[in-house]
Length: 79
Image (tube, rainbow, N blue to C red; front, side, top):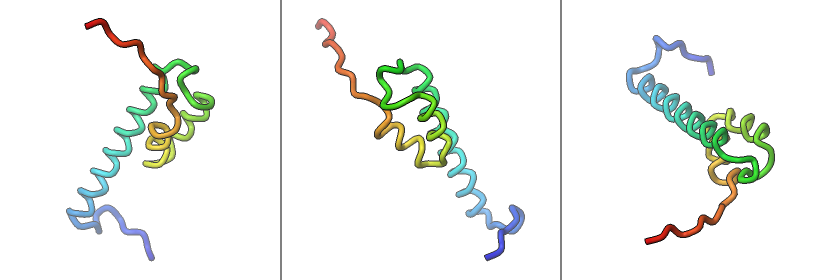
């Protein structure tokens, strides 16, 4: 199957590609921002490893949110 040029795509295909790219960038940016702010003690494994994994399309950010963050119990706020 030959690769299509951007000009050969239908408007629906172009829209889908742009939306998928925006979702991917949003997921990755959100995951990297969370990783940067989160202390190393609250990350499963090394932060450098997760930074590289997040770069892997949709799978990386989703894996980070599902498996990369430790659940930390917080003290209840006074009512």
